[in-house]
Image 1 (cartoon, rainbow, N blue to C red):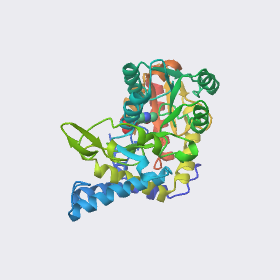
Image 2: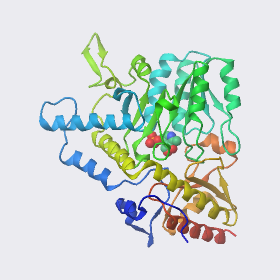
Image 3: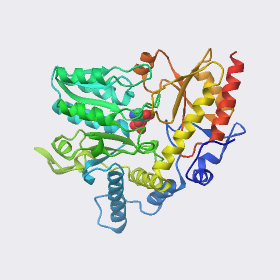
Length: 412
Ligand SMILES: Cc1ncc(COP(=O)(O)O)c(C=O)c1O
């Protein structure tokens, strides 16, 4: 019996994703690895193909018709992203390769210009390596220090610790992921932004896992910076964006140099362009960015709230069914968590679990999910992770459970 209520036509939505129609090892593909990367709907594939096939030209440099079409599409994509996250102005959106590059931009530009010896960057202990390593590099260069915000077993963040630490002073930046890719925890970023600002610190939110699943309003959240990856929200790989508050971005120096980001260049020195150009040197990933905007349009048309409710219903049902599998323990039980189901199984290493699931046509992720500090804290070397998206269904969970029962038998 099917029990998840879905306010859109799941079969029709699935049919829009060509990759989902295939078989793997003779079984229908049950794609449960959307936290690693989502599949792309036809609307995105077509937008990228159109950009490459018909409107292909370099942006911002040509006077000819194709270049102007490409430039318009690129600029419109910026407006689409700005609208999606409710930025106050388009120039607050800087295109990047993805979330990793967006965080690096903040760390290397803002961090190098603003951090002094002894000052602190507080990062949640559940951060992805993308929001740890760039800060460690900048801390090394500036003499600042990186400190982890402790997490509970669930894991949720210890906000009392955060408030006490902020009160002690010297904290310039708080970094946190909106949604945890390893456990699904949704972090209270609005509350954290309020605390950070009260004590004179800024907040950088890693939105990689949130954009496709949570309503994101950067102004309501109070985010100073918000990092995004297109490929986690039904868009192409190699595209993404950084939202940054206008006054902050304006004051920040460029971190990479090249064409398109300058006002003047001479061998005596160069002057830089305004926002957002000063942070976008060289030829940008125009097809990727156009595909990113098409993906956001697709999600809005499908209904962000409806997708969210569908994923929530499926997550609840899947949780109950996984808990019934012999020897399986779910890792990540925070209240209100997103559609990420991480688990460990008695005796079976996650790598073996993933390999057997693959034979059942089930795609999951295994490993530390680029969250080694969190894995250490939770006392597991790795987990198996099934993650949901708009196109996930109860048949995917049936196949997952069938595969896990096979694992339980093999390793009994
Ligand atoms: C929470 C989180 N942050 C950052 C990243 C890095 O994103 P990208 O590889 O698209 O730059 C990921 C990707 O898995 C993620 O899940």
